[in-house]
Picture 1 (spheres, one colour):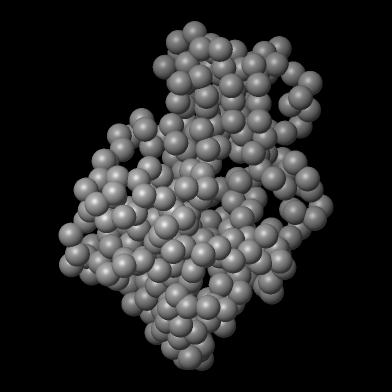
Picture 2 (cartoon, helix red, strand yellow):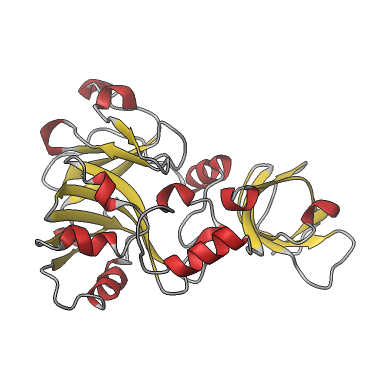
Length: 306
């Protein structure tokens, strides 16, 4: 509920962040306040952290990153600060300015927040089809369309000093089910700092039209040459899926993938793409129980599908 935050200020803040993050922050900053999702990558296009970026002005930005990744993000940005007029402040724990609620059902009838439509969140679609949202809500609360779990998934940022509205906390299994059913990857569960960003369905948070950013060369090469060897995928089984390795049914020498999340008869994970359509596959669970046949595979990385 309390992720890490960074406050970025200064006359060069917009230009500096535009050259660091995968999203088009300059485009998002056509109006204020506005928000967008983006990734900070290393030179090998591996994610340091995802972020929801709140653009308050050309000189002030608030970045919400994964809990525990604030110091890594700060260090990565600081490495490229030379003569820029930019100040950075790491805000974690009790210093975090907001509590963040992920909302996909509306328990806020008392506050009149039934749907995303009446939250005054107005979509602006850019030429590269990545979505940027103006974010306005009552009493200092920001509402930001997030979209990971579906079109009605959004975030509410509540100031630390403000009482949170009544809400129903999701169990770990419910959170996993939401990610699996949406075909989305979860940080530190399905992917992390050693993953290649393009193997996952994050294209809506990567601008392929703006100028350079850290890791952009690897992203461009893999995109336009079509050289991805693996992709995040969703697997359909006849029986409950489990965490484990994926093998070709006719070859058990080496796994061709790994299930990282499972919910009911659905699962998600990474799969090697070479000739996968020509073979049947099974899951061998980590607990060494009976293998689980896979009857359908959906490749979820859009750049592979293209």
